[in-house]
Amino acid sequence: MAGSSALEDGAAAQFDIKRSAAAMAGCPVSGAAAEYTPFDRPFIDDPYPFFARVQKEEPVFYSPEIDYWVVTRYEDVRDIFRDPATWSAAITLSAVTPMSPQVLQRLRESGFRMNPVLTNLDPPQHARIRKHATNAFSTKRVAAAEPWIRRLADDFIDRLLAKPVDPDGHRHADMVSEFAYDLPAHVGMRFVGIPDDRVPDVKAWTANRVSLTWGRCTEEEQLDEVEGLIAMWKFCEDHVAAMMEKDEDSFLGHLVSCHRANPQDLTINEIESMLFTMIVAGHETTSNVMASALLTLLQDRHLWERLVADPSIIPQAVEEMLRYRPSVISWRRVATRETQLDGHTIPEGARILLMIAAANHDPTQFPEPEKVDLCRANASRHFAFGHGVHLCVGAGLARLELKVFLEQLVARMPGMKLDPSQTFAYPSSLSFRGPIRLSVHW
Image 1 (cartoon, rainbow, N blue to C red):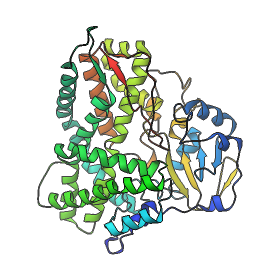
Image 2 (image 1 turned 90 degrees about the horizontal axis):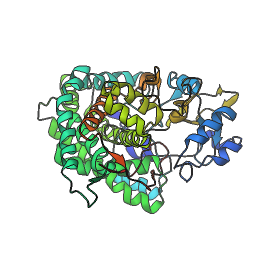
Image 3 (image 1 turned 90 degrees about the vertical axis):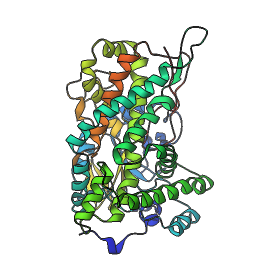
Image 4 (image 1 turned 45 degrees about the horizontal axis):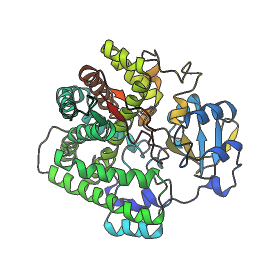
């Protein structure tokens, strides 16, 4: 039964982060830890050389900068995902950088009540809620979305093709702001059950949450960002309340129907919390991987031309893009007991950073991992959507979006090329990664 009578303080549950037992016990600091600077350049620009080296030399190490044990090998990441009893998901959506007392007080006063539901909830309660979410993301519902996703992609491409021509006969666009960022937001929000006219608000709020949860904000920045978080929670409360008066064939509509049928099995707060989580999961991740995929395919021109010549391989190519440049490069767990990992004693309460991007490039699993193989036979074994009981419930929709977007782009914009002499910047984030801008012409 849902614990609706004992709701956690949302601010404490998500953002009141204290130093772990690992930090207080004085875990050994290694050479890898000294070089691991996840919020600074040059790591932000290209973390993959670092991953490749430490995977061989020091596959597990403690980073005092972030107070996490960092895990890089495929088998270790897989085993941790598979053992939620030892490695809890409770901290998955918690703030990496502790919030100031002033920000925590502001959250509490606002009535912020986001509680663990899917990503950061462990069995057995996780199974109860996941059942409803999985049904809402049914194969039938996802498949039925393909026609309108394709129409929406074409609408965006129509706008690109209508842009003015420069003196050299070219049209130009930023494929992040004009395609990869906006389009997945519209798809994800429409599927979840959020009106199109609220997408700009949702996009702004997700940026606030990503910064607060996975970034390194100053106290002043936290005070600014938290207002977006509060507005986002208030929207979720209001939108769920409005949906309680409707019957709608959407992710949110399905959850509301489940609540009506059995209010004790799925509470209103759990629906609100799930919507709050899905707003980010259904937008930011797909946007980042789409932008990264375009950069990868256009940087190595023969890859793009191969898709143009043979779009039938796009579903396989999607898996390789998810492996090669996942939108979420790391995920988190916390040890529920003292345990051993690769020769290290991991204390109870120690935080674990699962380096998904490193595991996706483990040569023991993916031969020549730095090579892009559009038809790689085992590419789908990547961890871009997690693994085990917490495997992303929206993975099917994300795969469909990426397939449709690439199909329409190679068919309608086959001559697209990267603008020369541009550099690619990435956000300062522990987990989310994708180019901020991608200038092209055709």
